[in-house]
Image (cartoon, rainbow, N blue to C red; front, side):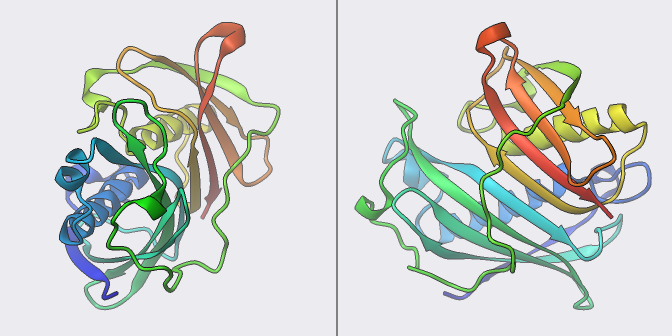
Length: 244
């Protein structure tokens, strides 16, 4: 399958104070590129709505060669790279206009039933997806598991503005909350060499989300988000980052 290419220019309002592109905004670029390609393949938002279904991101890994900066003219290349019964894989490659490679990323997605939130069997759907394809990363994409010795940093009350087309919190918002908590914990925001995320539950407007950080000098730095329900608190998101 021929990869799709999309161009994005990094605007000032997408950047941190040091001029680097915010990682959660970079993920928005990737999500938009993926959505455009899915629509091109007949697998977009409207196509799945007709089947009472929607895409959700469940695993993601980003590896940076150089962080995009304000003013960069980015070309993002994306392509599907195979699927199993429950997971569809998609790859990304980012370059400057001069061909300099900036980053590579890999992702895994599920299709959920809109009424019950259950994963749909991809092999039973009429999907225009290849059985396999080249991978962007040498590292295998695996699901993260919670570690120990987290310190609670803050609690987020989920606002309406965090919701997407599907009525739940967009995947990039989890990353924004996590990196804000990391800044509060460390007192600064390091540039990132690697970011890996695992999503474990949907989050909705009005939910209270506790953000916990494990940053004891060891790497990768680990961040956990969970619903604030006391003894019955449920994990919703795990993040690991490697500073540059």
